[in-house]
Length: 397
Image (tube, rainbow, N blue to C red; front, side, top):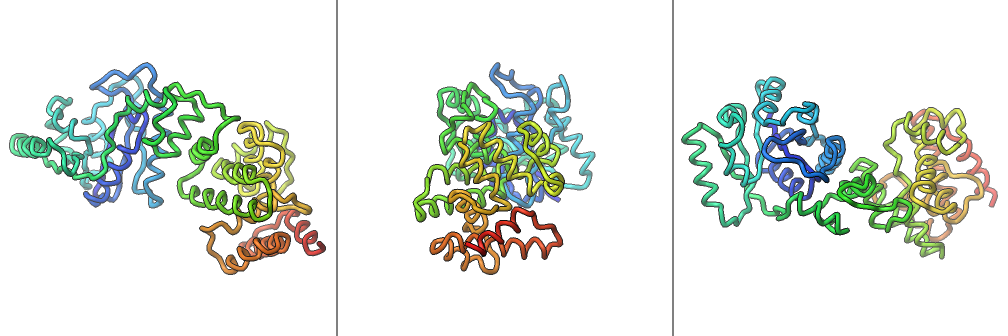
């Protein structure tokens, strides 16, 4: 197995890191990539405004998740767990070599790091433990210098060095991004969930008010709360909800906000969901108490109202988007059906449902509810009473 090792302070991790890592995975045909945030970097002092190790780990994990659903990229806490100790690369490689004795290790780094690697702690031992993959722009003015340096390392120290020609290298440092964030800019250099995490936790001098976010900021924050594989669904639900609101002359801004927020607690644990319900006095039935799937609509609604400043109509639309209910408001209907039939959904009958939603919303709701019951029962699960009551109601209207 070929394993890539990409370390750094990741303060914050940015698109330069992400694009370079993705290129290395392809160019080296890596089976696995480990992203390793440094605890205490040996070559520089961490600035006063640096994020905590826990925050840097969390942001790097978001970046790793965004690099694909096959889990080829993972974040490791090897270095931040060395409390009070400098993060020497050679020690990290020693640890990984013990764990993967027969695998091919590739240490990834920028071209500037390659030029100074002989100054690193036990550089020659690094060359014994891993091959070196150094990122270089395809048309870098220093490309010939890098080639000569790589050849000197190979001839003089037995190093195995490969220059990785990367078309897109973001020409900005983490320091420059931190300074930009302090000025209220810089989000274009960040993976959206990472930017959302920064806003949510008010890192690097950002001062976002969660109860008064713009649509773009709200998207970023909610994307930082879910897994990357869920983001296309949330985007699709937003797109469909706004279309439906326009068709049925409902408030498009409310439909947008409800759709952006509707799944924000989708990946919270059962314990986290129950804690939120207790905090906001949400009454639960016996079925809801044991089901994250049912709970997430309740907890997302609570955060939408109490954290993100949504109004009551938006809160209610999120609250019932999973089960539906009898006599739903127009916004509740729109969010329920948009969630069910958004463009990434692919199941028998979805095209019929999509057409019906723009012809007769109540009939579309009934069809969606009936299809949902069939699916739930086919899985051997219990249908929530709200759904059954909704079916009876919409059959009678």
